[in-house]
Image (cartoon, rainbow, N blue to C red):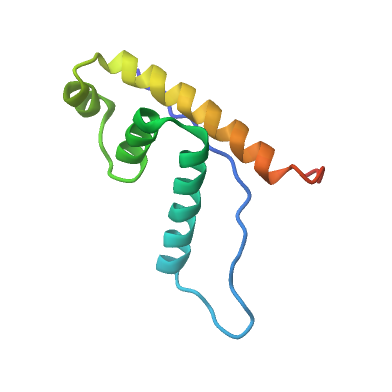
Length: 100
């Protein structure tokens, strides 16, 4: 049974008073931000796996087959990568000492 792991982050509205961004633009901005954090936190293999799962809707089994490993190995890589991603996000987001 696969367990979903949530990535918590604070949404920041990038709209200016003069122009409203569309939902699509916000989605692109969020994706770009997540890609930057993935690049900071993960090695190349981890980043590829996260992008395939979260941006390209691959199943872990499909990735495992492509990589020639078992699904459990992919699952372990995903869990480790998300932990690293959370840590880097937290360190970058809260580096000012600001608390929620």
